[in-house]
Length: 338
View 1 (cartoon, one colour):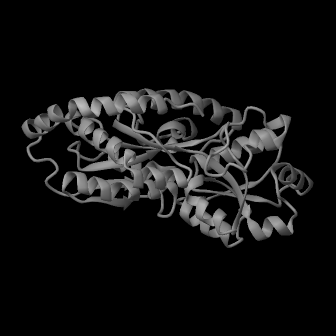
View 2 (cartoon, one colour):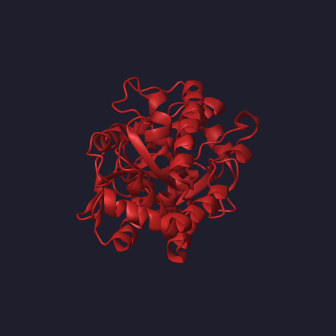
View 3 (cartoon, one colour):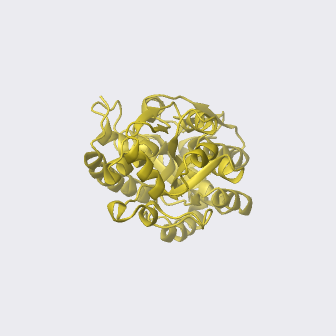
């Protein structure tokens, strides 16, 4: 998954330093004392998943930076569409933000026949917060019982026992769902899809042995992998993750049928369209600063998330390109939601 965030961090930092005083002046003249009340960060999935983890990593730091509380709220359902629609319809005054994802702003437009918001026209992109791989994980005890310790064994078992395995995800249209659908199509296997209202509840059922496999975002699965409750079979990106250097990619482990497999995830802050650019730019500059704070960056990297911080314009271009990419993946997988 090739996203323009590494090189762009230097650009973002330069802009942050050069424009800080102008932004402050613009805020004072155009928006008075913004923010003069709490700001909501809407997470469109249930607690416990990577979207929630990243929002909760950013909220206290933003609260310190702006002197007002940034409060994480959950509005779940329909693969993130419920929360995204709520933010799209909120006043464009800087007091309601969305922690958007590759699902809400890259996948859903192609996956859903009727999307209740326009991912481009209804939002003002602020910045990409982080990029993460997904990881193919099984309940460790179940994997041991079925003698599955790698992707090749998994494929062999699935083909020998068609319909016996099921696949959890954080909801229809999430990157977890599409990563699994792409795997099924390319490997010629079948797993019944069981969507949840977020990665957190799905992960709980996976750890409990109630479902068989999940293509989860790495940060939410990492504690369970380290604790030995989950077995990581592969990461879904084209390169290995530095957080799990001994775990191969799906492409590496899956053989010729999975050559070219690549399905990572990303997460970013957005505001309703029409939010004053002074607010958008100030938020982006503070997020860049926060992501460079050693405590924050080290925490994210340890969980498998790669901090970003690109400019609003760069994030807007990235969202447009991601929609083109994922439309092809959705068509290839045959997945759709009415």
